[in-house]
Image (cartoon, rainbow, N blue to C red):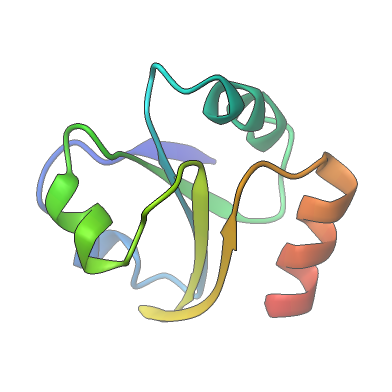
Length: 98
């Protein structure tokens, strides 16, 4: 399931067992391509964070390039991936870090 961060409830959103946070921007081509792949991923909840709307979160998590994906487990960062990945590599990365 994909959700978009709409307000300041980020900490609440990442408290689930495992969640992938996708830091993206609407104008970013690789972000749009990754977004299409993320829509096909079913075994993890996804939270999309627009870096233009939530610059403070991007800075807090050291997001310098987009797309950047961070996996959180019970509210703690467990893995970070910078750049878009093909679906096969993305699913492997998720499984390795669950």
